[in-house]
Every structure is written in C-alpha cells, then in structure tokens.
Image (tube, rainbow over all chains, first blue to last red; front, side):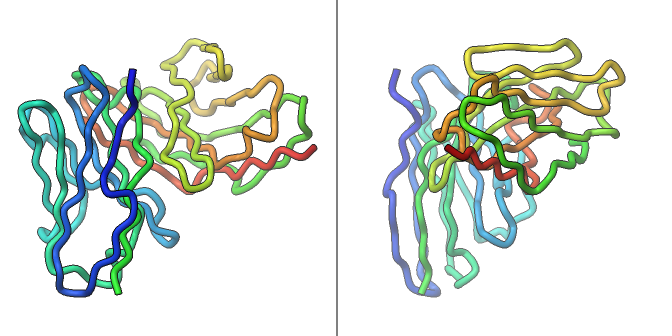
Length: 113
Length: 112
C-alpha cells in the first residue's frame, strides 16, 4: 500500500507570497492532519480534516488554512508568508476516528526569504 | 492531552536493549500512551500504543505501570538505524480528532 505523499518536497518563497501544499493520504484513510515543525517550536498541530470538514484546529493565525477534497486528498495554504513560516510541513493520515495511529508523509520543506 | 516528560537524550550500544522512559503522571483514564519516532529529516513513524496493558509488536514493547503514571518503550535489540528522536504522547484516541501533542522527545543514539 502506498504511503502518504506530499508535494512539493521543497519550496522557496518570498515574504508576502502565498503557498499551497498538497497531501495524498494512504488509500482508505479519511482523516488528514497537518503539522508544522521548526527547530524552536518542535512539532505543532495545525489542523485536522475528516470528510471534507475541519474538526480540529491548532493555535495558528488565520493565514494558515486548509481543505480536504472528496477523495480525502488535502491541501494547506499559507497566505502573506513571513520569515517565521520557514519550516517542515508534515501531513499525516489515519483511519476514520482519528487520533490513533497516524502515518506521516516525508514533509514539504518551505523556506521563506 | 496530558503532559509527558522524557529525558532529553540517551545512548545505547548496538545489539543491546534500549529502554526509553516517559512520565505522564497527569494522564486521564481515556488517554492512551503513544510512541512515535522521527529519524533525521523524515516524518515521524508510529511505533506502538497502549492504554493500561503491556503491548508488544514487531518493533517494540510498551510497559505501562499499574498506576499509568509512567511507561517504558523497549527496543529489544537496538541497531544503528534506531538512532532517532523518540516521542511519548498521551492522547485521547478517537476523541482527539487527529491532534497529537509532541514534546521535545528523547534523542536516542545507538553506538556501534
């Protein structure tokens, strides 16, 4: 069974721009969670989607948003990029019910200059 | 999620058992103990989880104390590829709606 895939793997953007990251979950997994990982803050939960609905949200500004499509694929968007948004963005998928075993993708490394 | 406390780093010789402790003294009755690890530059990898009984799978064993205030992850025969950051997480399973709260974890270094 194919794992979680994330595209692109690496991205360089300029302050003020916006970015969209994509995540394809494991087949049959309907819950998708997103995390941000930085050296200073570690791994932090952004939000979770299930059946195209956001069920949970972490403590991030409204510039961070996401969505989920009917095939469970998910995207996250960051608008008006700031230098501090440079991070590894990870998505994870799990079976319905969420919160159990999560399977992580390799991440998208975003650099904001 | 209950707060977990782990030692910042541990060393282990290759072939020996690695015992990684975790304190979760404020864990509530519906919270499971999960262990994940993250090898450098990769996404975290699920290892094992348990509620109150000891658990074993092909990767590791999880020993949870009777009062559930602490647990130990055991890698029975550590290899160099087990060098990673290990995270212990207390999580309420299905009611947490996808949120795992990662702490700083334990950096395990396996030496030849």
